[in-house]
Length: 216
Image 1 (cartoon, rainbow, N blue to C red):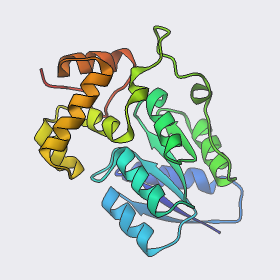
Image 2: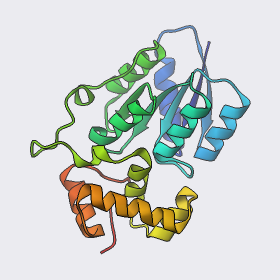
Image 3: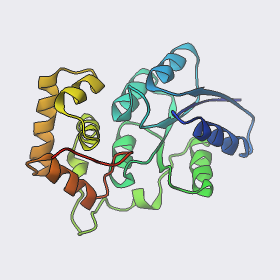
Image 4: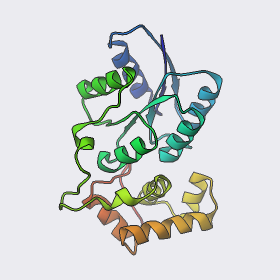
């Protein structure tokens, strides 16, 4: 019996993933659901799970920070990340942080089922896109790959239109630290404004759920 925790803030997504998993032959599955990062961490502290399906965009905490925290606390837990974030960038970071796989929510059920099957079997799920060299559409290396996990989380919040204080509150850090992260991001990406950050994110298909909407 595999104990599986499905963490996503959309009820229909959680139910759909459970139904898809039940269709995979095995020794049986037991499911629990979480609708936020806080609920996810609470359930992990109360019960041992074999597998976690984790959305990157839930109520706080979320993102790569949450994945890193989960892997630090529960290193034996197999994690499959599902997200609408750019696979080109975030798959690499998730795998570096110890996830067993990363798959876009835009994939059809066949690919989702295959990814789940691979992780259940103890293997890593690597899509064709992940296996390719991470190269942008203009033939150059995607500049977002040089950002750290926390810098990518900050970038996504900036692209959602948050200011430095809002970023600090969302990540539980002080405003000076958030400002420092913003400065590092701008330097690494060689941009000088939120407008330029938004434009380069579009060029390399790095989008935040709900649209970018960075302030001018």
